[in-house]
Amino acid sequence: DKPLLEQCYNLLDFEAVAKKTMKKGAWGYYSSAADDEVTLRENHEAFHRIWFRPKILVDVKNVDFSTTMLGAKVDIPFYVTATALGKLGNPEGEVLLTKAAKKHNVVQMIPTLASCSFDEIVDAAEGDQVQWLQLYVNSDRKITQRIIEHAEKRGCKALFITVDAPQLGRREKDMRSKFEDQGTNVQSGQTTDNSQGAARAISSFIDPSLSWKDIPWFQSVTKMPIILKGVQRAEDVLKAIEVGVQGVVLSNHGGRQLDFARSGVEVLAETMSVLRELGLENKIEIFIDGGIRRATDIIKALCLGAKGVGIGRPFLYAMSAYGLEGVDRAMSLLKDEMEMNMRLIGCTSVDQLNPSLIDTRNLGSH
Ligand code: FNR
Image: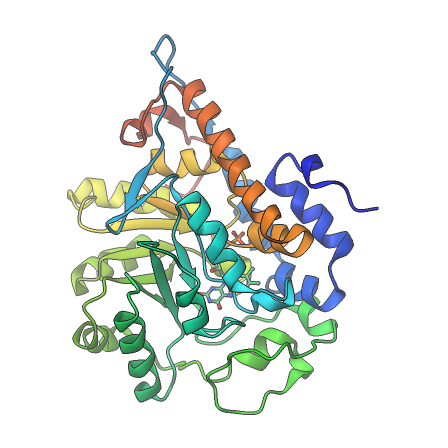
């Protein structure tokens, strides 16, 4: 008694269907977050504390919400963020997301811990489709160097280094459900111990000693722009500018790492006020992810100063419940919402989105 795909009217609808229809272990891995999942809920709820100050009597007949992110031209300012273990939800795994991203002309970030091999995911891309690489840094830097060089050679356009996971968070829902190994493309070279859940089983190779001192090494081994994924305070954005990386993702890993980390959008507000005060707002591209479920969430982030946003779970849920058609519909719904809401706030292009269009007095933190 699964609802028809046409009965999903927004991204949250896919989550409800996925919860009912997915295997327990897969649902546990995708949906879980750290400890009491307070940050998971906050990621979504923080957007509810931002209100609009729309402009009226603007000619909004033609609306264009295409933009560029790290030089890539995209239809709409979101990208498919990196989420591990795509085959838990659908046998096609990440390659299915590649196809959906192509259809909607958005960027896909390829996870280090994809179920499909890196080459399969790159081979599935067509034409000038843009893909980025998400990197978990291995304690063995030779392995990491090989991954980076291979990605650059295969045409990846940016390197997102995950910096919020020196140790994987405790995701109890995931730990409780019996994880069945889906034949992942794991680079640890170790046998995995599944007793702690999927996440911990596959992540033991990640280097907890990674630090700011390592950034010049990454810059020396690649020409790809480098973006730090998982930055959580304005001070660290300033450091990122100082060390000369091209971008940051203000993110708490979808609430899966430090519980009580603030939402990306709240950190964004803090960061932009610091950067604007120092005249540094154009020195770095800023992205956020976490809890983005509506086009209004995307618009709010862009009004604050983000270049784009990452979306994770909703596409996993759509993929698990309805396959490629599901992800296709989820992306179409976001485009529909985007067109309507751009009109309703009185903007015809993303470069018109600015802080005067939102009221953040209830957001807190700055
Ligand atoms: C993730 N995320 C993630 N991030 C990363 O850098 N490497 C990874 O391997 C993964 N894997 C992963 C698996 C699953 C199942 C989820 C839900 C998330 C975090 C991800 O990139 C992103 O930060 C969040 O998913 C964004 O939050 P939403 O959109 O899921 O709310």
